[in-house]
Image (cartoon, rainbow, N blue to C red):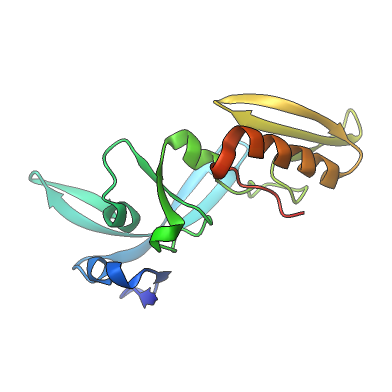
Length: 166
């Protein structure tokens, strides 16, 4: 079902979790996330401010729904941070959560893991696994490079791989 916060953020949630979303204080907001070579991303979220152990702290709706323990992240399978349906949420490590992110906002190839290599005059495909960047080779077309990325991502990242649409 779809709900709207008082400040106009629309989000999806399962009926079983509507009571959580109706608890006082939830509001929609955005935060800016900047990563070198990834550019600035504006990410919407639903949060509230609560007092825990005498201190003000922020609570995120997706963490509340899954009752996520400290140190564990919550991933949105489809990448939509305003989709709080349980079949879209899963507990994960930071590494798994990063594996499921989309292509950078600075992307010019149209594919994740694919960049133009000016010196070789070809498309370069690469993937990061366990914090290490691995070259997958050079290709005549961006699509060929994207296919190589998809194969490597499926094999090394499993269900957390965000694949290119081909």
